[in-house]
Length: 441
Image (cartoon, rainbow, N blue to C red):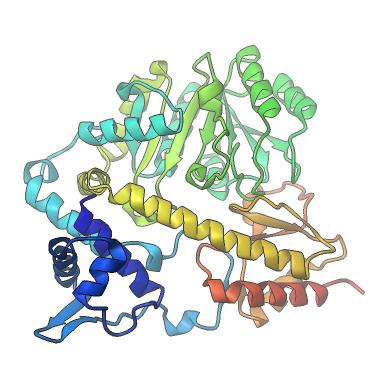
């Protein structure tokens, strides 16, 4: 990222935080604040003018162009329902600059069919990005997909043609359940407790009906928010070799992990038994439809073959914009900003839970999917009615169970990515009131 872009982003941060109201400080004050030269500050200001974020009044100064960041329908809501980053946190202006650069510089690539497995330049950038997380792989093993959901779809088709089954946890990610149910995949389930996996039960389930694949979210599980221990991961890899199956490791929230010593299943796998999936929907935005699948070498040809019949190739425009976004340094900067902001909000949620839910059990992971374990006497239908009355939005965990599965948990899952900081404490208090109003007499 060039120095003037860094300064421009810092100015935008101050605007978004409300520190700069209607007018920017003088050029001299900006130079002092950001320790930048007059040329750099002037370039940054012109950059913001070009993005329609500020305008200049000759001999007066620079003024902020106001924007609506919240629709009227959302003003009274307390949204704890989604892990997706709010659009107001995304640098749309910087992204539009990358879009313009992509159209200007990559005309030929944008208007022709691309490679089925992905843009080679972007794959190289992704390879380096993966290395930062200790995911070392050959470039040929990296498949750029239209979101990780497409990767899951491709593996589902492979299972169908090979007449293989899949093991899924209960509860688990709702979209893998949709795939299993709508494609009528052969499946087996294994119960996952709120804080651990019963490895003996898991092995017995695998032994009784050996699956071809096991789908897991080892880190920041959806919906439980828990992370597997090193012992659990090592045991799973032993099972994969012993019973001859592949693990699909969905690491879609890996960027939000605060523990730098965490090791993925892929990192500790020595037998090419792990398929690693990485999503960009939480750091970037879901509509971009970009994901990564790192596949064992023996899967390269078949994966490419199925992807080709699904969409020929992932959107060239999305790939080229992402390439420009990463090369400019904006991706790394934006990622750090999003993760830092989220950790701050998660800490606010943690403090509010300690205040209002001291008598309840909840997973204190400071990250995503904070789960409050509810007492058995809670009427869940009444609870959702009470939450609706109070304009509190939460995700319905029933979608995380396959049809007909006997649910063993009663819990609420809370996320803070979309709710404003100033609403977190009040929202948690409203949730407590709704729970207390929903207990069976």
